[in-house]
Length: 136
Image 1: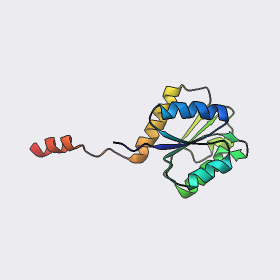
Image 2 (image 1 turned 180 degrees about the vertical axis):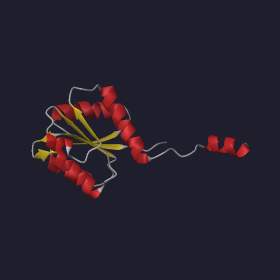
Image 3 (image 1 turned 135 degrees about the vertical axis):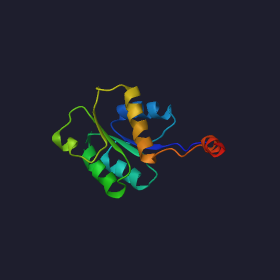
Image 4 (image 1 turned 90 degrees about the vertical axis):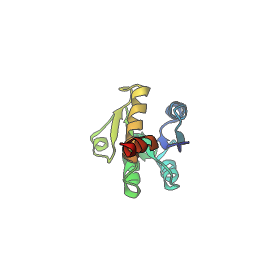
């Protein structure tokens, strides 16, 4: 049994419900926050594998959250989503910056999957592969 990956989603209420439904039906565990302060508190509790945040938040920006995340856990991928992206967003320490509405849910899920795989590193050899190599 594989361990569920945890994604911290930070966005407005409407977008959070869509993201939560999409991610949970694909087997991810979702932590949700509507503001920078709540997101930082959830992240500080640990166990987050990826952060996906709106670029603009009511009490700050996704860039600030990215700096917080990377300051304590540089290996955790950060994805920023925004409808109006500025230069400050492109300078943020993020793995992926997406303009809202320019991607499908399937594309977003594939991006997230790849970031999580990249974080995990290469797969270990399976037992059957090891047996076949040993038999050779």
